[in-house]
Length: 411
Image 1 (tube, rainbow, N blue to C red):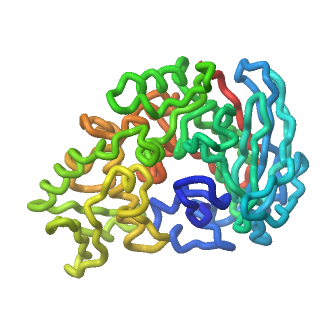
Image 2 (tube, one colour):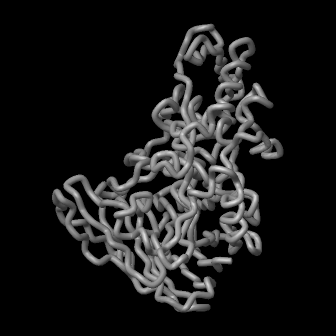
Image 3 (cartoon, rainbow, N blue to C red):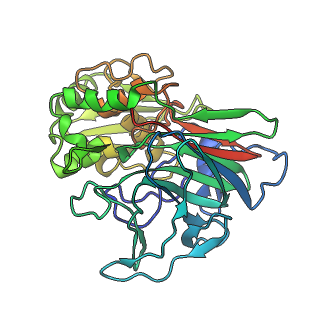
C-alpha cells in the first residue's frame, strides 16, 4: 500500500515512507497503479466504494479549534491534491520556486467531546490534524511541501499537530498511526468491518504521552529531541533521524553497537529470512573489512552493505537503502529493524518473531523503545520498518464500512 518513498528529510513532495511489503514476497510484486497492496483479500466481499466515512472523535480534552486535512495522491489519476469533507478531489495548482501558498484545504474538526464525520476517497495520503492554528502548506514545482519541524524556520514549528497515513483502494483500507517523523499529539485509528466488528490501534496507556517525553528527557543525549514553544509548551519529540541531522542527538549514538555487530559477524554468519511465506528463501551475511556481504543458498553474493552510521539506521536509508525489490530491500529492512531494536547481537537469525528481546541493549533506539513501551497494545510505527514482524500500529480491512480517528489526551 505504500507509495514511492519520500525524502526522509521532510519538506518534499507529499509521499510516504512506510513500506509495508515486509512480510510477503508476493506482496512485493503486487503493484496496482503504483501502490503496493499487501495482505489484500484474494476475493473482495464487495466492491470498495469511491469514498468511505471517517469518524473523527475529539477526546483530547483541549478547547482549541481542531483543523483536519486529507492530502495525498488520487489513485485513479496519480495526481496530488486534497479532499474536501465530502471526499471530493481537488488537484493542487502549479507551485513555484520559492514555494507558493497552497489553497486552504482545512476542514473544521470536532469540538471537545464531539465527533465529526467526513468522507475519504481512494487516496494514498495523510490525514493531518492541528490544534488552535491552521497548518501552513506550500507548493513547489515538484508538489506539496510537507511540514518539516526539525527546521527552526518552518512555519509550522510552533503548531501542535500530527497525522495519520492511509491508503484506500479497490483492495480495501490500510490506516495507521505513525511516529516515524515525530511523536506528538496522540491519536488512535480504527476500522469497522463488514461483520460489524471494530478494530483499533494507536492508543497510549494512561499517562503514556507524558511518560514518553519524560523518558527521553531522562536519557543522556536524547533529551534534545523534545521540542517546546518559547512559552515552554511541549510540542513534540523529533525522531532520532532528525535528531542526528540537526545535532540534537549525537551522531555517534549507535557506533558502539554497530562496532560490536561488525565484530560478531566477522567470524559468525547472520541469517536473514525476509519473507514469512517463503521460509526457504534465506540470505547469509558475513563481514569483510568495512562491508557486510550477503550470499544466497548457492553462495553467490547478492548484495553488500557498508558499515552503517546512526542516520542510516534511524532513517532506514543511505547505507541501509531499501529499494522495492526482492533481494536488497527485504534484507535491508530486516537489518534496519535489527539495528533499531538492538537484536542483531542476541539473535543471528533475523527477523525476530517475538518482541521480548527488543531494545534490551544499552545502545538502542531509545525513542522507539519509549513509544512502544507506552502503547496500550505495544504497537507503533516508531521507525520506517517497524512493520518487520508485524509490530506496527495498523488496521486493515478489505471491505471497510467506517474508518475512525480518535484524538487522545496529551497526558
